[in-house]
Length: 138
Image (tube, rainbow, N blue to C red; front, side, top):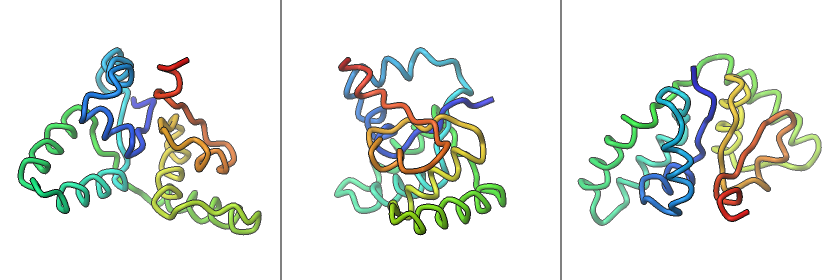
């Protein structure tokens, strides 16, 4: 059963093998403990498509998802999205739409979100967040 949901920036760090400490932390986890959101996968696909080396980027992405499987969305994620968006809108603390979906995905599946964008995600009540980049420098 997964424990961590990796944000897009962490997946990119792992793909690029830097910072090395993030890759080392990821490598210590047993298979099946880490997933990425379908939203993150979409963001990574967009990055691959706009790359000047799109074919190579798509191949690297296909390798990445063998290490970090894609967690599909379901109605529970959508329900969390509605509640969280309403709360953040009412409090005047909205976050980016894709980040809102990723946070909803983590909460719906009781996963810890790993990101280097902690300030954005800390606005979401109840979301557990870790920053492996900051931990590697501590």
